[in-house]
Image (tube, rainbow, N blue to C red):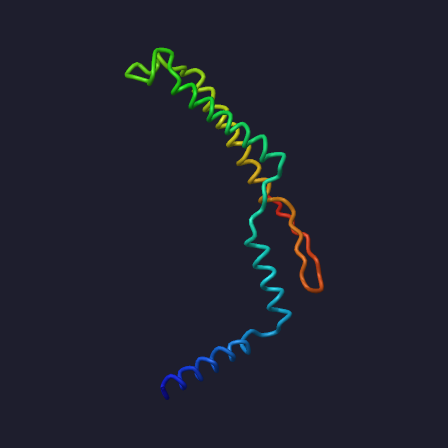
Length: 131
């Protein structure tokens, strides 16, 4: 029991003394805010998100329907190119690729979009310029 009390006392001493190493509270808040702003993911603009997602979903639906829907029976057998609508499936893959490209461009645009950071005592506007 004596060892337990000593362990608890040391645990309390070490646990309460770590706040002394934190430094100035204002600097700690500013550092935490800056780290949060840097790690916070940017959202894709809705002008890229909805058209890209709609084209991707529509294209994949067309591809699945075109490749799996057969004219001759239940399932696709050995002669896939003759039984399924490969033209429709290929067009669907192309449309899905276009939707994916729009989503990618939206994510790139979100990465370089201006960011507003509010810190104690100041507000900053950050814009990444690449050439």
